Image (tube, rainbow, N blue to C red; front, side, top):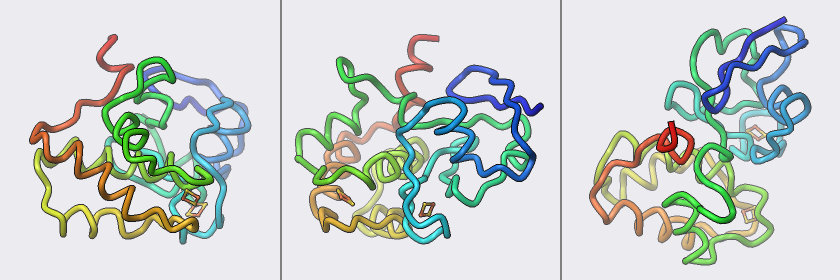
Length: 163
Ligand code: FES
Ligand code: FES
């Protein structure tokens, strides 16, 4: 039995220690935002936050999480009340097939929680590990810039606001 702190809730899970965090989230907790892309740390579709840092959850064993807080796309907002980055991705129609988007948003969220107004270069360097096979990078960057240009660091998302 492993206890995971996910999106503000402690979740007891019957999984082996080496189970990838992505499998625990998707298969056991039914949090399907993060996606399985390459399974090799090369695409970022599986990106979630662990104590505010983006990680490739396909490569991250649950035993390595410990007491740290895991956050997934589901923590940022809902269909009815999207978070700032989710709204910006909608505004810029940054989604084509959508497969990369949860990972993109979580990686951008990590940056914008740390840096109030990142430069274009900071944004590009930070987002470099995540790939979009549909080629909507320009729209994705524009969406992130829309939020960054407001000059306020993001908070931890809708769940934290309600807490
Ligand atoms: S699925 Fe994790 S990096 Fe590609
Ligand atoms: S929108 Fe299809 S992979 Fe990015």
